[in-house]
Length: 470
Image (cartoon, rainbow, N blue to C red; front, side, top):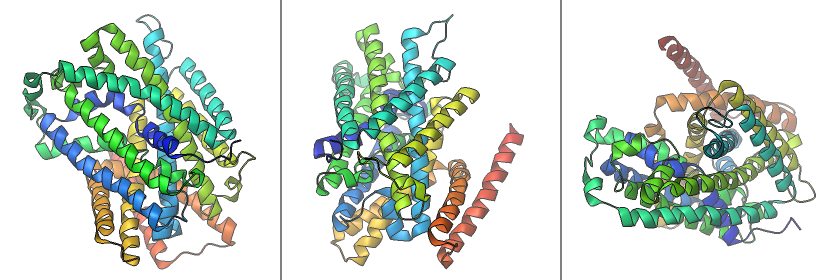
C-alpha cells in the first residue's frame, strides 16, 4: 500500500505546496511595506534568477549523483564533510519544524475571521487556548496520516494543491481586469519610504526567499520518487509556476490600490484586495483557501522534517534511535521526534503569545546557509567531474545568490541563526560518539567549531546589548 513511489505530478505538487503556503496570501502587504513598485520588480528579478539557478542546482546534482538521497543534508555532507552536512541538516530541520508551527498558527488565525468578534476572541492570532488545542489535534492527525505512508500523504497534498491554486488564479484574472496603470505608476519609487533603492531591494530579499522555501522538497523525498530524473524536473516546474504566481500577484496588486494603502492592510492582504474588487465574498474565499493551503503545506513540511533526521541518523549525524522505518516505509522515530518538538513549540507560542511573523523570521534565518551550500556543492562537483560549462555556471550563480541573501539578511539574522545552530552541535557530538565510540575531528572541522564558538559569543553579546538598549 504505502511503499508505492511518488510520481512526477505528486512531486511537483509537493514542491508547489511547500512554497505556496501562507506567505503568498500576505505577499502584497509584506512587499508594499518595504518597497515601491520599481524596487519590487528589481527584487523579483534578482530572486527569480537566483532561485531558478538554485532549482537547476538540484536538477543537475540529481543527474550527476543520482545515487544520493535526502537532498540538502546529503549534498552538504558529500561536498563538505560530516560536520557541515549536519549543520545543514540541523538548520533545515529547524526551518521546516518552526515553519510548520507557523502554518498552524496562521491557519487558526484565519479561522478567527469566521468566529471572532470585537467582544469575543476565540482564535485571535492563532495563539489562544482554543487555537493551541486545535493545532495540537491537527499535529497528531497529520502524524497518523504520515504513519500510513508517504505516498498517501503526498496524494492528499496533491488534492489540496489544486484547491489552493483556485483563489490564486481567480485573484490574478480579476487583478488584471481591475488594474490601473495610473495607480501603479503613482510613486513608483516609494519616495516616502526614505530608504535608497538598494535598501528597498535588500528589504525584499527575506520576504522573497521565504515564499520560495520548500523548493528542495522533491530532493528531500527523492528516495520515494518513482524515477530519480523526476526529482530535478519537479523542482524546476514548481519554481517556474510559483514565480509566475508570485510576480503576477504582487505587481498587479499595486495597480489596484496605492502602495501605502496596501502596506497598512491587515493580513492576509490578498483577502482585502479581493474584497476591494468583488465585495465581502472575496475576503471569505481567500481566508477559506488560506486555511486549506497552510494545512496542505503543513503536511509537506512534516514529511520533510521527518525525512532529514532519518537520513542523518543513517550516516551518524543524528542519534541512532532516529534510524527506523515502520512497515509503511515511514521514518517513524524521526516523525515522533519532529512532532513532539512541534508540540513543544506550540506550547511556547501559547505561553509567549508569539505570532506568525515572529516564527517566519526565525524559520527563514535557518535556511540561509543550507541554500548557499547547495550551489557551492554543485560548483565543486561540476569542477571535479569536469562537467559542461553551463553546469559550472549554474553552481557559480546559485552560490553567488546564496552569498547575496546572507548579505541582504543582515548581521542580526545571522547571529539569531547562530544561537539556534549551537544546540545542534551538542546533538552532533553525542551522535558522533554514539556511532564512532570517540570524537574525532579533522583540522577543518576544528576550525569551523572554533568559528561557531566565537560567533556564538558575539550573538550572546548582541542579544544582551539589544535587551539593554530596549
